[in-house]
Length: 122
Image 1: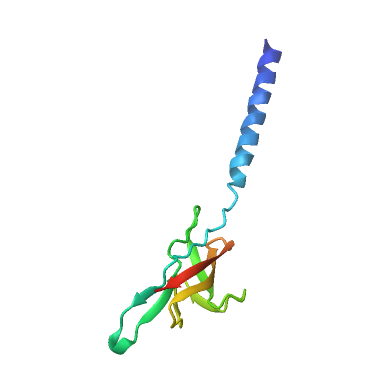
Image 2 (image 1 turned 120 degrees about the horizontal axis):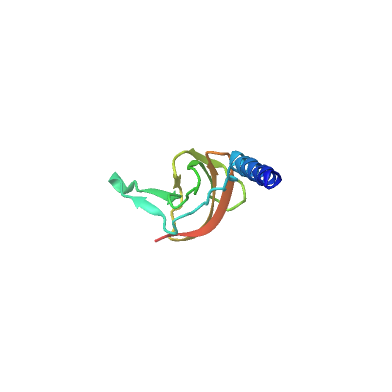
């Protein structure tokens, strides 16, 4: 009986240690998800000075927050417009139509994600 209890306690101790190690490692970081609204936002200004912006507010991070936004506004693969923690970027599009735009987001753990989408200026 004593041998059985010692063996059972050894197994229980090993299970506790393994469980503790699993929790100590924590969950892996999930990368953020980049999201772009498909319609360009137009803010009417005075004297036909309308401001046009692309909007990345649909972006999210399941295990933290999106902290940085970079934009490819000419579709060339280079994210030359850095708006920091602001999810919108002003654009110079003047003609109605569709434009190929990219968004790269970074979360608070340094993970990134990129999305390209057609956005429409009506």
